[in-house]
Amino acid sequence: MLLAWLLLATACATSPYDRAWVSSELAARAAPLGPGADGTPSLPPGLTDAATLDEGTAVAVALWNSAALQADMAQLGVSRADLAEAGALPNPTFSLLLPVGPRTIESSLLLPLFALWQRPARVAAAKAQVEQVARGLVQNGLDVARDVRVAHADWVLAEGRRGALEELAGLWSRTLELAEARLAAGDASRVEVDALRAEKLLAEDASRRARTEVLLARERLRLLMGVVQSPLFAQAIPKESPRESRTLRPLPELMALAQAARPDVLATELGIQLAGSRLGWEKARIVNLLARLDVKPSTSANGSPQALWVPGAQLDVPIFNWNPGGVGRAEAELMRASARYVLLRQQVANEVLVARERVLQASTSLAAFQADILPALTSASDGARKSFDAGDAPYVLVLDALRRLADARLRTLELDADLRRALAQLDRGLGKQGVAHE
Image (cartoon, rainbow, N blue to C red; front, side, top):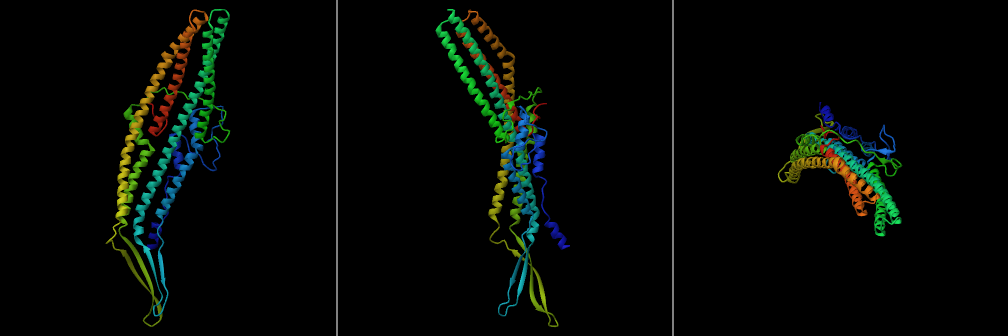
């Protein structure tokens, strides 16, 4: 019976929160985690290196190859090793006194009984720590997904700016050609032509810089995707994902979703449980009881030699040391974990509130630019150029109209990027992609 109890007490401590669990959670929230075998960039099953790259594919490739996530996964291995150590018992202590002079040989065996009693508390704390680390890794994966979506939005913006600036440079070039023709006919002055030529050169320079910005934005995204040292998506162009047409959920509903689903909130709750378990464990360490078994040589009634087995116990008497340091540290950790939990819930509420307001603001402004402002400025620009071509308007009117149209087009692109960034931040704040809309 005693042997069976010891075997049950020393059974291996395990936890279901491993790499496969983290990958499964990330797959339900964004995309699965990659195998991380040798660090060679690869593509998730079902994906190929295409000429275009949307944000969903970018997130899937990033979570599959992210070196940062693979480095963070080592924390899970450390916590699982701590769990194995918490489940292990200290070895018995064997002592042997050799016969010297009139002293006979003696031996003793010490078995730490309180270690058996304390083991469940240690294992429970270690299991909570493993789960806490695993949920924290899920949150790290969501952070990577958010960063990738923001970088993809920056890439889309850079590509849109390049196209708009190249189109603007073409407009300045055609306007300059008309001005030079009017100068040759005596209908324009040299000052007008020189001013238009300067605008054309500035537009061409801005167009060249925009092409460089596209390259840099793509490489920043490929770095986050973990494919920067491979040919994957090296020549890809950005593909915009269709914008969500459904309305956002009400703010209270979003708050409730975030508090219930955020992995870091759940991890912080586990931190309170972990600190409480450690506090109980530290209080239990005040007393230490060991089972003792001494073996001494003796003689039987008929005078034959025999071994005398003397069982006993050894107890550390808590007179001077009541483990004040360990208990005090555990109490402070419990207070800190509780305060962190309160702070994190406040931060989550603030993140959701701010992200939702930014989504609403960007979508409202974008709708206004696309529906009213941009068409009006386009019409004004076309009318100014036609009047200039016919000789009925000065070049200054054309300059002003083209500048205002260029600014409006660039502002429209920026608002679209702001909307996509805000949606990425909102999804991260909610702890799952695709649940922000009704």
